[in-house]
Structures are given as structure tokens and as C-alpha cells.
Length: 235
Length: 285
Ligand SMILES: Nc1ncnc2c1ncn2[C@@H]1O[C@H](COP(=O)(O)OP(=O)(O)OP(=O)(O)O)[C@@H](O)[C@H]1O
Ligand SMILES: [Mg+2]
Image (cartoon, rainbow over all chains, first blue to last red):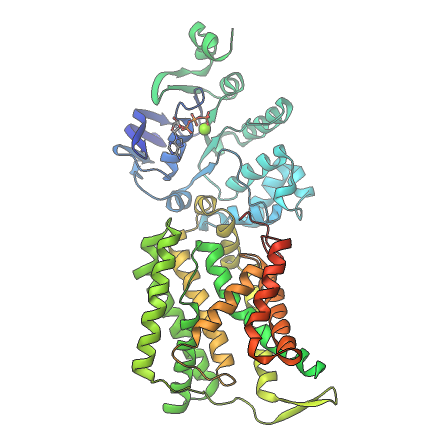
């Protein structure tokens, strides 16, 4: 059974339909990327999975259990976690308090100290800056904090929206490298505009265009595809 | 005269801060201005009067029970009235305004027009600075106010509930992503806001007996303190409360007691001219 199984969902934002008949699966331990240009509906898809938006049709299953229409706090308690677009750290709280807040769901709270150590060893800078207000961190540090905060709930499925947004390539690379270290423990579904990185660090990928899945498959195969290269890599 | 005004200002200021904390909490978490805040203060005063004087309960037990009942009443109001208005600030303003009028008239019908005064906790007066005698009840009220403010501070800084509140007031959507049931949190924080009004009510009503319409002045002062201190800021409430308390009492002592509340407004206008977001505010308005 797939960890995440989405079948034929439609999503509206206000009056306008943004996603049409999206189907997608993620197996345990996989890293899957969602690609697409601005406005394709990538963030909308993640928002729908975590429960910020309700599908008007179709279903979302997590470990075979329907979670369509559940709210974000329920899904987080179940083992999903979203690193939102634009990081959204609690700017007026310290690094350590941001991390603690991530551990709020029971699954995270019972192992908070242990997870905190793991997160700090993944991102040592967070340990050095533990008392600093999150709003005063650099963009890269804030992204590390946002990922660390999501990991604090000990998620099984981590949804990451535009990790690379506004970050220098070396920082992006560093953060991707850390995500790879999580290995089989955490399954990752990531949204990326940086197609080259996304294909490099994922095993499978879906391509969204105007709210529809237009391609899907093995990341390496997609990376060699002439159409994809022309459309997204400018080659 | 000077020392008396100073003492009065600090004592009253602490209670203003307490009343303002409740408003500030509800604004910070829910973006709702509770116009009926003062009526919850008054309700607690009536409760504590009747529990102690009519039913003969111990004054402390009467106060605790009153605050608890107002907390529950506040949560019920959130579920029945406020919950439907989220996202429409004007609507919640109108609803709580109507609620405040309905409550005032209900108090008039049920409790009558005359002031009700719960029993004093302590008797006598203390010589302050060797200058004048000051009512022990007022000193005790100030101490009680400080204790409640300290409890609120510790709750905000040290508990999971406080962390949830701070996170939610900064970014409600992300707090929900972190597993916070923000619907339940709204209910609790509205109830807590009312309970803080109630705490101020039970502490102050032995000094200023409650009347059906007495809540309006309380709410108005609380709003002035919140705007002066900066929306949603804990220290803003404390400092703002003290400033308004001091300004009113110095103004009343040295200029004219008839204009007591005007002095607070004048200070507010000056501060807003210089710092539009209030003393401790950093939110854009
Ligand atoms: N809050 C909103 N209200 C109405 N429409 C929205 C809202 N947010 C996004 N949209 C619309 O939904 C469509 C998909 O947006 P979405 O944010 O999912 O795209 P995206 O693929 O994540 O884009 P980007 O790469 O720029 O982040 C866009 O046409 C956008 O204009
Ligand atoms: Mg997006």
C-alpha cells in the first residue's frame, strides 16, 4: 500500500478551479518531486494534501486511511508535515522556541529532547543560534529552521514547498544534502522550481502544467527528456 | 499630595493593566475587539457580591468561582456568537457591541440599578512613606493584580499553552500546521480574555462597587491602554496601564478630578502621533 495515494482531486481557490483531476502516489521511503512553472498549482497541491484546502472531488489516502477534508492540525498529528512556501518561521520567537513549537503534536513532544539533538546535529547553525530571534536569521538559516521545525513532529511524510526559493545555490545544495541524510526514515514530497536540483535529489517526479499532471516518471529519465530540458532547463 | 497621587496611580494602573491584558490577548489571537469586555468585568463583580454577601461564601472562594464562571460564559459566547464572524472584523465588533448593551440591560433587570459592593478582604489603613494613610484594601488589590499579571506572564512564557498562544498570534496558519487546533484555541483564548476582565472585576469591585453600566468606562480604559501599549503586547499592557493610571491620578490631583479620563486620552493622542503602533507595538496598522 502506498503511503500517500491521491486519486482524481479537483481544487478551487475561490471561484476559480486551480487543480484538475490530480492523481499521485508516494511510496514509503521515496523522494518525489513536483515540478512546474509559476502558478502551475504546486503549492496548491501541497496545501490540499496537508488540509488547508478541501478537494471538491477525489480522495487522499494516507496509509490507506482517507484524510480528504481533514484539517492541518489533524494531519500533522497523523504524521504529515509541511514546510510552507516562504519558510514562515515565528519571527518573534527564538530558534529553540520555534523548534519546540514544531514538537507540539504528541508524536513529537514525547521525544522532543532526542529529536532536538538530531535536528541540531543536522543543522549545527541552529544550535549556535538557539537563543536568537528567528526573524533575525538569514534566509538560509530560516529555511533550515523551517525544515527543522517540521522534523520536530517526527513526521513520516515531509512536504517541502520551494526549498530553494531565494537561497544561494550553495545553501540550497547544503540543505538538500541534509535532506538526503534523512534517508529511508522520512519520505519526502518536494515542490521545486529549480528543476535540475529537484531531479537530482528525487527518484520520481511529476510535472504540473496549468493545474494538470502532464508528465510523470523516473527522475533520471525525465532529466534526459528533450521536452523537459527545453521547457524547464533552458537547453 | 504627590506621593498619594503616585500611589493611587500605581495601584489603579496595575488593575488597568490587568483589564487591558484580556483585550490584548483576544485582539492578538483572534483579531477580535471585544466590546463587551467591561460587561464581563461587571458580571464577575455581581457574582462575587452575591456569592459572598447573599450566599455567605468566603470572599476568596467567591472570587475564584466568579472568575471560573465568567471563563465558561466567555467560551460559550465564543462558540455561539463570535465563531461565525471570523474573517469579518466589523461583524464581530457589531455583535460584541450589541452583546454589551444586552448584558447591561440584563444586569439592570436582574441586579437592579444600585451599586453592589463585595466585602473588603482586609480592614484598616497603612501609613505610607510616613506621609499619609492608605486603605489596606487598595494595597491588597494592587498585590492581587500583580499576582495575576505574574501568573499570566509565566503562563505565556513557560507553558505549552502560552507557547501555542504566542505562535498562533504570530502566524495562525503555521500554528495549525504545527498541530494546534486553532478553533479550540480561539474558544479558550476568548474565555481567558473574559476571565482576565473578571479577575480585574473581582479585585476592584470592593473598592469601586459595580453598576449595570459601569463596564463601559472599564472597557474604554482597557482599549486606551491596549492602543497606547501596542496591540497584542504583554509589556505594552503593563506599561500602558501604569501610564494611564498615573496620568489620570496626577491629573485628577493637580488639575481637576472632573477630567480624570480626559488626561488618559490626551496622552494616548500624543503617543500615537509619535508612535502610531503604540509604545511596544511592531505590527503595521
Ligand atoms: N489565495 C489564493 N486565492 C486565489 N487564487 C490563488 C490563491 N493562491 C494561488 N492562487 C492561484 O492558484 C494558481 C496556482 O497557484 P500556486 O500557488 O499553487 O502555484 P505554484 O505552482 O505554487 O506557483 P509558484 O511557483 O509561483 O509558487 C495560480 O493561478 C494562483 O494565481
Ligand atoms: Mg508555490
